[in-house]
Length: 266
Image (cartoon, rainbow, N blue to C red):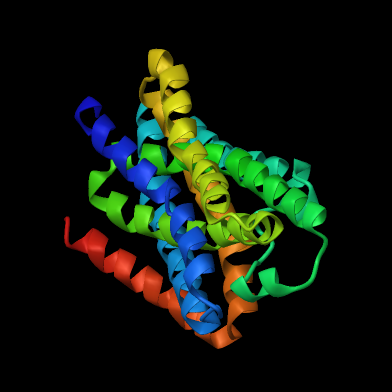
């Protein structure tokens, strides 16, 4: 596992910094391609749901059952899974509504005439909210890459895609409030940095206590976090950007691609 730490951290860093891509899109595009974004978000949800339920949850259960026995290990897996959901749910609940990263934002919305102070406040709140929100997300990405390098790439791509609209949400209001592309990009970039920071802090804190039981609990929690993000953020955003069936087909497509990628490594 130790040999994969650098790879896992690098992949988490790349996923987190994709908020910067969203920021660049906001600067160069006059209009958001909603259908394309809908497909990307639906695809990401399919990847994350499938890998969480089929691979990560099962790996966690196997580790916990081996250490705690079938009955206790199974209960521990399910408990940790829903605790992961509870954690990310509490974080979302504590965030102010205007800064919640799950609120869909398009490039066009920045053109609406809104007071500059309010726009700046909205952008800063969103950057702070995304930074807090990305902490457990970063740990989830890091742990999946650390334990299962063969599934790391699709998971990282899924997380990266869903970070793009978050970058738009930060950069658009700040840019229109200040007129500074560099300032808007900087705040967007920093909100994404919290993802690898969350991974690093989480790993350093947990490393002294790491054993098969702790790993199994964390991995089950990671599965819960990813499923929650998919249902709470990716799917609603995919439907809002596009059409119901378009996002559904993309969801299924993401599951198919993830399934095939896992089968190729058997």
